[in-house]
Amino acid sequence: MLETLKKALKVKEIRKRLLYTFLMLIVVRLGCQIPIPFVNADAISEIMNHFANENFSFFSAITGGSMEKMSIFALNITPYITASIIMQLLTIAIPKLDELHKDGEEGRKKIAEITRYLTVGLALIESTAMVVGFGHQGIFDTDTVKYAAMHDIRKWGVIVTGILAMTAGSAVLMWIGEQITEKGVGNGISIVLTINIISGIPSDISNLFKNFVLKEGMSIGGRLLAALIIIGVIVAIVVLVIILQDAIRKIAVQMSQKVQGRRQVGGQQSNIPLKVNTAGVIPIIFASSLLQFPVVIASFFGKTPEWTNYLSQSHWCNPAQPKYSIGFVVYILLVIFFAYFYTSITFNPREVAKNLNDRGGFIPGIRSGKPTVEYLSKILNYIILIGAIGLIIVAVIPIFASGIFGANVGFGGTSIIIIVGVIIETLQTIKSMATERSYSTVKGIF
Image (cartoon, rainbow, N blue to C red; front, top):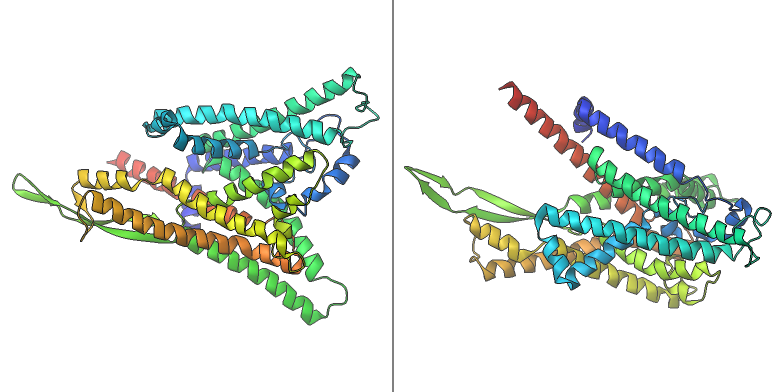
């Protein structure tokens, strides 16, 4: 991969795309530091403190810490993620959307357009809830604006300004993601999500070492052992994710021979590569977002009722409070459900069998038609379960560490899955661009 990247950097077009992506990411990180107008920095720090550690570690990670600062990018791309989840659910429920999904490029563009409108609508709703909910907790500077006076027109000006700023910020991030996809490298939304997570990793690692390595009263040997364990666990998770991302089940395919003139063509052997982790990181994101959403809504009203502990990863696997691990079981079931659900949307065994039959291919030992569909479905169901179990193993290692040892970090297994997955996908995109460029250059010479 490093050799491929070196070759790619020699291509001017790829260098321009990489530079464009880098500049857009700088804009993203700068926007995460700019607070919405009239906010009180001290009040923000006090009210939002729990976002950085307990119930909201994952939410804090995917927003790049912008939520704690109540920045113009506070919502970040979470409305887009939610909108994508809703659209994929509706694709199953509404035949018209299913037709659009199968209608090639034009249909996908139409679905993308609907997703954009839905993203803005969700951002408007979420920003309204946040500004009003957190506003009542004293988030705005009372020396500048008498927010408590309901009749004061300036109060409504602050509310509208905050709502518009946060909604516009979410829309701008969605646009930046699309621009990176079009003019940069890789999937823009995924890259924005990744840079947000990466931005919080240094402080999380620092906290880990501060709590477990630099702890007072520890011997030098104990410090060294703690450091090695932390590094070992992180490396092990990364290696597991790479193995999970690259694992493929190949299904042998034999193409039928055909006679063209006096020659026989075809008859070559091929395969259908099925990724073991067919749904990628989507099941983890969907499951985590679904569980965190009610907790975030409750926090808007300044309340943290006990039921939120069942949905919060920081309370799972804690021997002192085993009842909250019910949420952990629900989390595992949701990951498995979304793994099957998302794969059912993106991979249709019936269509694969039909395309294979149309091209004169067949799976050795399996008859064409319904038997092929049943065989593919059986294999797919098996590898989906293996992939989901792999995702769960990677995701729960930090959850166990948090519950048993109190090692709360924002970059859990979920975050590492996202980072490694996006990096691998982006490098593959760069490799494809470099290969395509080399092929075009050779073709131009001849």
